[in-house]
Length: 405
Image 1 (cartoon, rainbow, N blue to C red):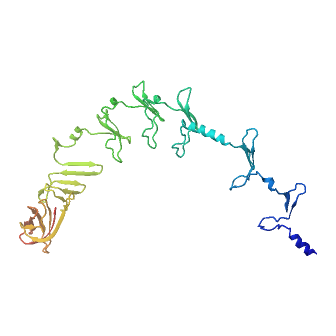
Image 2: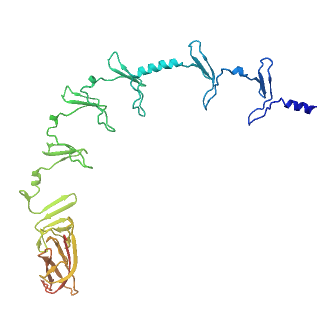
Image 3: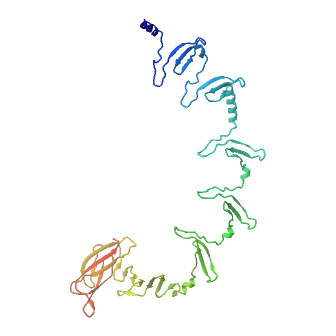
């Protein structure tokens, strides 16, 4: 009997767990409320009437298309006071919506306004503020510009006639100019910036003025003044380091050098601190008038042939041009012509000759004369115990020649 009753009951039963997922609550019952005539649904939270099809005719969904962060709508009706649709959202206020006719009117007003409007955002860059308004000030008659910082009158063309820019060409760290006018007391132009006012010089003020920076190179110090020292009666030069020093007059040099107009005669010694340099054009070296330059304990002998000898007898090469060097060993006697292995381009050749000890304890003095691009004539003398005599024997010599190849 019970089994038959269960089978008959299942034929009209509705599952309370079909499609149940994690977190869902199973349905416990579904019947008709005799009072409201609506279906009643029961679960662990209690019983609630369900809507019939007739109940939702003309109802709009407040959740269709609802996305993350959206708020569900709870109602849409006509506001009897404004005559416009009123929309309500969960936890929010009620707001009137516009009719299509409202939009048409607004669109026409916007179009009419755009015909005379000025953009407040055109060309707006990062950090800029949009313009909020532009109109004419009835009091000043000037254009008034408005943004978030307030309103400010703009200048008319007539206001800036004859005005100089205080910012034109301004670079990093420069200060803007604030004014330029004539000082009523001095008659000079006055320039103003944030540091104060300063008179500018007129052309007449700088006539005969010397520049203290013309030709200034890195590391140089600018000159600040040049005048006559009343105490010494000499020109005094001042620089940016605060140093003032007297300059020498031509008469000061005349009194220190034995001048024979306009060249100096005799020897010359120059002292600077602990360094001493001397020049004497009348010194003979190797039986030739060559002159002498002395620095400390060392000497050089330049001569008029372009060669420079050191005090140890070595010859300095000319380093001012491209020079080729020929070095070779040969034999020769006094007066013999020595040929270069290769011909030089010109007769401007420098020659250094050294003798080789043959082992007989003989001492030679070696020189050269009649030097040209092809070779030179050898001058060699030897010590005979009591004096030097012409060396007629073939003697081994080392030759170094400098010139253009």
